[in-house]
Structure formats: C-alpha cells, structure tokens
Image (tube, rainbow, N blue to C red):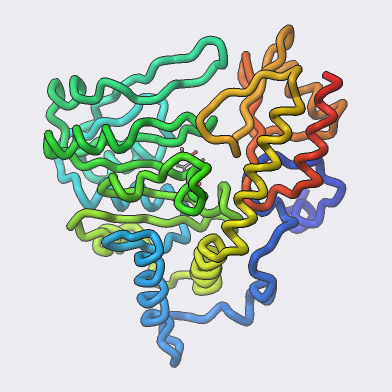
Amino acid sequence: MSLAALLKKKNRKHLFTTPSHNGAFCILHKFYQWYRSDISETDVYNPQKALEKAEEYASKIYNTKSTNFLTNGSTCGILASVLACCSRGDKILIWENAHPCHKNAAVLAGAEIVEYSLPYNKEWGIYEKLKNIEQLLKENKPKAIIVTSPSYEGIVSDIPQIAKTCKLYGVYLIVDEAHGALYPFSNNLPESAITYADFTIQSLHKTAGGINPTALLHCNCNKDVKKALSLISTTSPSYPMLATIEANIKYLNSSKGRKKIETLINEIKELKNNLTNIEFYGDDITKILIKKEGLSGFELSKILFNKYNIEDERANEKSVLLLTGIGTTKEKLRHLNYLIRL
Ligand SMILES: Cc1ncc(COP(=O)(O)O)c(C=O)c1O
C-alpha cells in the first residue's frame, strides 16, 4: 500500500495506541493548512526570534532553566542531553532494556556504557522501578545516569529520591519521561521529573495530543543544551511543527486543557470500578495495563482485536497495554465497558 493510500484508510479500530490525537482530535485546526505556514528561518518576520520567545514562555510554564522544542522526538532530546553532559571516556549508566536512543546517545558522545538491570515482575511481564541507586553510583562512579520513568506500562520511579542521591555523588540525572508529557498538568497523575532532574525529555506526540514526533527537552542545570542540539539538528527546522508545539503547551496549560486531562482521569477511574472482572496495574492511570485470569496477554490481545474491535499498544505473555491520552474520547473509553463480558 502506498503512503498516501495508507493515510486515507478509513474504518480503523478503536485505537488505544500512540499517537494520542488518534487522527481524530486536533488542537490545531488552523495547521491543517500546513504548506501555508511552512516558512524558512530566513523569513522576513524572523521566526528564530519567535521561537526563542516561545521557548522562553514554555520555560516559565514548566519552571525550568530552559525548555527546547524538538521536532525529532524524545530521541533527539536524549541524544542532546548526553552530548551536553558526557565527554569521551566518561561512564554513563543505562538500563539494559532501554529505548535504543539511550545507547546511541552514549555512542555519539564516546561515553562508556555501563548497563544496569531492573527487577522483573513475572506476574505482569513488565519491568519494575529503579531502586538502590546509591550502590550503582558508588560502584561505577558514572558521569550520568538515564532513568526511564514512567516506563511504557506506567511504572514510575522515585525520581526525587534518585535526584537527591545523584546530587550527593555529583552525577547528572537524565529522565526519559517520553510517556509522561501530561504529568506537569495534573495533580492526579504522577509528579513530573522536571523539577528534580538535570534533563527531562517528554514526547508530546505520545500522550499529549502533539503530532509525530514533537517533543520537549527541559534542562535544569548549567549545561549548554543549545550547543548539543545544534550538533544533531537541521538548520532548517519545520516552523509549522514548532508552532504546533507552542500551541500544544498553551493548550495543556489552559483551563480547558487541564479540564480535559481531569475528565480523562475520571472516566478511567469509573471504568476501572466497573470492570471488576479484570485486573489493573501501574502507577499512571492513563496507561491501562490489564490482565484476565485464564488468558495470556497475547490471547487477550487477540480477543480484544477480533471480538471487541480494540487495538492495543502492546501485549506480552501476561498482560495487555491500552494507552490513552488527551485525544481519547469518552465514547471510546466507554466502549471498554463491553469488556465486562470477557
Ligand atoms: C521510553 C521511550 N523513550 C524514548 C522514546 C523515543 O521517543 P520519540 O519517538 O519521541 O523519539 C520512546 C519511543 O517509543 C520510548 O518509548
């Protein structure tokens, strides 16, 4: 199938997957006219200045030293963070099953990778949170550590405690919060790492309604992230994409945006109360990790797809992950109530 044909495809399943706008919810209708806004950085109205101002504004919202808009995903934010704080030969602690960009970042910086493992939860087929970091730091004396929190499945590590220990040992803390872009905008979600970590990276496209692959790099230390970003970025950024990031943040921070997040949370709470026949797990309510006694995760996934017209994000031997985000409608969530018949 050609790309054009693929994009036109109708009659999709009820998607519980990224991207969170799901092709149905668009914060930014005016950007449908993409080409009209596709200007270059040499434009007479000085888009570079406008970008600078937009990033300063974002930095105020998130209370950071700097917040940079990324049009190449969290991947790009992880690469830049590592390039900003690690030099050739420095040690960096990386989770052995982390997203590939973590190791790629170390390779680019010429840093020495030291892998760490996380406890495995056999009941759910997922990895648990990072603990006992002090031992890791004492043994390895790294320059930096990358922690993924939340995990894909919504497991959140104790970042304030980890940050404290990192400060004590003079280690830069980089938090991959790719799946936690809604956290700064609700007290009913886990606390964001932004206030505690040296670098926090969030994908707007995964949960916060942004288009693929918009993301943010928040920095709360004195490292030169702009310079690091310039090593891996084009000099011709997509201004329409950058503009969607600005509008996306404004929306999330508005009362309308915050209300939408609370509605999502409340709807999922209600759903969990209704579905007494299913087990739920995780620290982040928007990542619906489920299992059903007597069924493997793969079997459950198949039933959801074939019988209930539901496409999940991921399944493993034990459980199934249904991702929600700001684009998940009430109607779609209510469709999950049929699972009472499972
Ligand atoms: C935990 C984690 N970190 C980083 C990334 C990279 O994010 P992006 O697709 O925004 O580059 C992903 C993407 O799936 C991810 O799951």
